[in-house]
Image 1 (cartoon, helix red, strand yellow):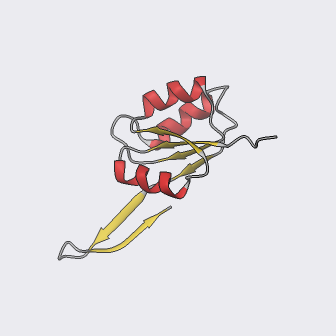
Image 2 (tube, rainbow, N blue to C red):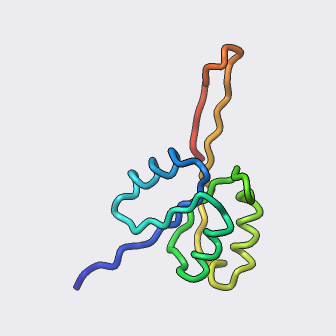
Length: 101
């Protein structure tokens, strides 16, 4: 009997972040989205097992998208992990700290 792979949706407007996450999650089926609205439409039709959600996106921020996920009967029980990158720069403009939460 073949094991069914879990599906993870990555919702992030930054292509580099999506590539990094895809590389780390190569043993999963990945649904990749650069915008929140198309992600919501597709995930409602095909709910993933997990959503990795960027907080800072141009069309709809992650907090607003999370509210829509919780209001959606098909998605409200899907676990969501907020994934965001923030960099603090010194006066020289060189990043001193970067992290993904």
